[in-house]
Image 1 (cartoon, rainbow, N blue to C red):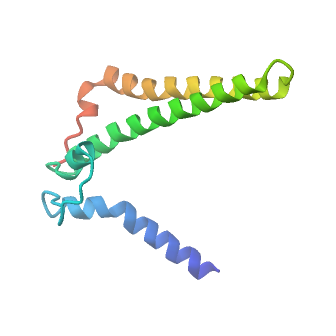
Image 2 (cartoon, rainbow, N blue to C red):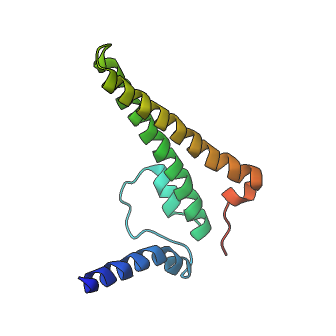
Image 3 (cartoon, helix red, strand yellow):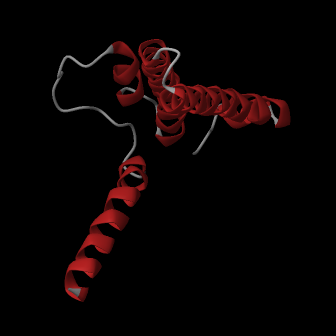
Length: 127
């Protein structure tokens, strides 16, 4: 059981270290064009590790915002279907809506705080 835990730990460490190893070799160039969306293609065709991390940060913010909107739609559906009689479902939907709005403020807050501290933080430059 412990051996499996060590193997998983080593594999995770290698997965986290892979971008650093790849950046030591220069520019990252994909071996084949796989028809991926342009934003992800921009991340793959980046000049180095800094550009790659910048693109991943923007993609993560976008995905987080899209998931929050989907969750908000789900909560609205629960609220709409619950009707007046079901206080538990209405309360659950209100809680989900509150959590989604808080999460969206966190996503926006991360970007705004980093931008206010120093706009160059969002333009990571690793040489």
